[in-house]
Image (cartoon, rainbow, N blue to C red; front, side, top):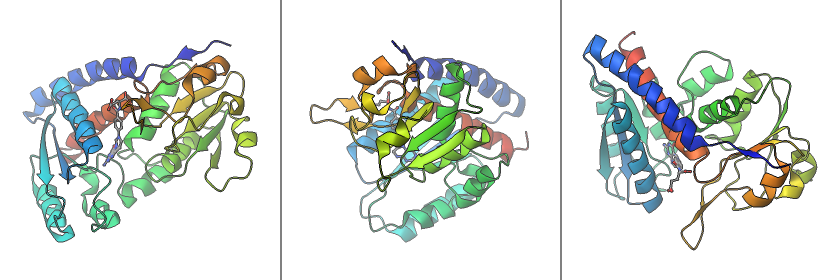
Length: 285
Ligand SMILES: Nc1nc(=O)c2c([nH]1)NC[C@@H]1CN(c3ccc(C(=O)N[C@@H](CCC(=O)O)C(=O)O)cc3)C=[N+]21
């Protein structure tokens, strides 16, 4: 089977055009410009590159943004006090603390500190809990983007067997939850799963979120499956590559997302969607 490529880049473009109209409408009716503040601790080059993408996205849709760039040796106490100030700043609607943080800072403490109304990553335990029981809240960006990608590709989720490889708090667990809410039957696999191939072979929808280049090979994929590749692995030649061996997988899958140009651009787009959503919630719109 020759598969169709699900373009996250195209869907991101389309979603951002629609979002731009919604931002314009919100701003003209309230005189408020949605604002995202990004905090980066240290100089991780990958983080700097992602943040550029986020700022570019904000600009595209009419959201204002700023970056608080802190030194690597910033104390946890200092970071928490900056978040406190942003929580109280009426002009700020979204707060994103770029992960990973230096090891001397406790990520859980930091995520807990962010106002749940401004938690545009959807990482705060209260928002995670709401998502879990299906209450309206800010959803984590990558999982929300994945659901949009699958639907946009015209693929039914209800009744399908979705197999997720990876159980991180930011991708594996929440995407499993959102797929369940869409009435998929969900299996979560991880590093201790016995016979991974036997599991992935049963997937109508396969989500690869392991963080290992080319880990999922064509022989692990069911004929006609929908394959979502969440991997962002930087190779030695500086090329970006996914968790799925794209070329061989494309012969087996019905539809597949590429890397780059798949899940990544949708992650940033959902962050922009969440920032407008946060501004609306804060101003009761
Ligand atoms: N608090 C927090 N929130 C995050 O959402 C978050 C984070 N920390 N830490 C790191 C990960 C990673 N992440 C990506 C976002 C976009 C692309 C993306 O747009 N990738 C492009 C390629 C970009 C390139 O070429 O470098 C693509 O796949 O086409 C990738 C990765 C967000 N993350």
